Length: 235
Image 1 (cartoon, helix red, strand yellow):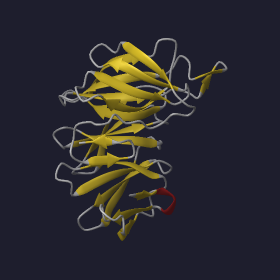
Image 2 (image 1 turned 60 degrees about the horizontal axis):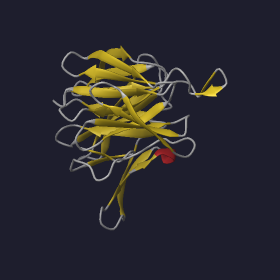
Image 3 (image 1 turned 90 degrees about the horizontal axis):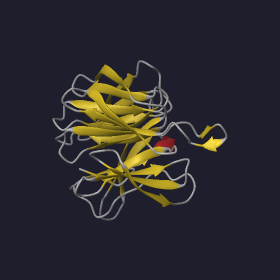
Image 4 (image 1 turned 30 degrees about the vertical axis):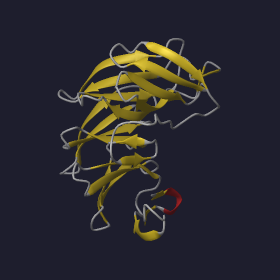
């Protein structure tokens, strides 16, 4: 479990929730989102308020290193590629996605996607990565109007291949897929709305009114065996 304010990870018994130990991560202010290597032995966490990443040995329970991102941004969500070689890091301040070599733990690229890049979710067939760009809190006096979008990255080419805008403006934040992978659900952080989009065309299928500042969301039950936390994401 992430103890963000204490800059540490707490390890708890999944049955009793009894604390079994902690991993201090002192150089990771704002530790939050994470994803794991394919074998589950290594995790990379984003350090939101230090513009970097932390690489953790989950078996040895220790920090292996830190990586400062080149643009000194504000990293948010992180997802590993289907082949386990590359980690993609959404950066809200830089307005795009950093491409990280997981084994070498170094930055090897950056993909510009849009203002306020935040949430990431891979397609069910493992070929695409959906990227939420939530825009500014307020544009022209109206919340989140005109800038929110979803970008689509092709894993094979590591290029942005599509960009979908919310009709009338919006602020897509965290993402989920339905079990079939045909619908992309996004919380609308500044618009009190959950958006449902077609994953092939980007067509907006529905708007669901919710409370203010909606951030995380989950679709349950869903596919996957292991929870990645934060947003009810399974793999």
